[in-house]
Image (tube, rainbow, N blue to C red):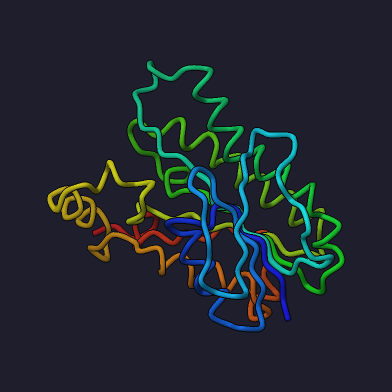
Length: 233
């Protein structure tokens, strides 16, 4: 039996990860929602409320051992640099970086108690591959990449830490960018593989990174982006 905690497990990539993990009846998954209360039809999944900015993160009655942790919350705020505000930048940082830091600090004893525990964080293709109007996104996600490598060094050999850097994925978070067939087609054409990522694509890699199959992998930022970051057509 293994225990997993997925922050942001009620929609998009997080939901796909919860579904894949819980498909194994031997796994127990604690997952969080932000704005809409969730109930799971699976006996091995439990949802609870989470807000990154609160002092009490809501982590009550977690198992003593947590074998895998995933932090999924994110934001896509695309603005010209001249329109960036301190408040918006800090809100992004609090959600995507400080939320991850506070959560990992809170559950670190549970991760250390497990055998070969794993952490999976999320960056963006926009960190290593510059795009117009992505400065706010890239700043927060760039911090996540630095955090990944630093924690991988500090937590080795007990806890592995890896990061996934996707390109645009068809989730509610990206809804404004993919709210028509024309937008979906245009965005698909920007990728060498000529399609938009699906939550299940990301969940496959995330569950691999949580599993013992990746037990010799840590400190990696993996570009899962339809070839955008490396392939030129």
